[in-house]
Image (tube, rainbow, N blue to C red; front, side):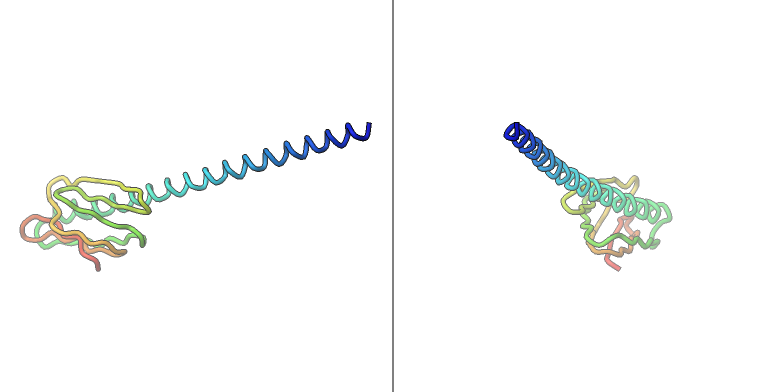
Length: 125
């Protein structure tokens, strides 16, 4: 009788350890997914801010500029009328409607300028 109780307790303890191991693995996957989604959302916010400033400077004409503050760790890529923001490997892309980018820098604070040729320059402030 005592041996059976001991075996039952060992089985329950083993089952508890297995459940804890699976839970820890699932939590690690959830944390990784949450980090990727956070980075993607930061990239989408950054690209939307640059696009909005670029469209505004473009619509107001030559010589107009807008200041955009972004979080550190945002890398920008510009080509033609597309701007891309990369945060921790997650990338978001947006397009300007009427202007094109002539230059683009990465950093945390940007000045978005419409030059005399109708091209948008993104320079670190």
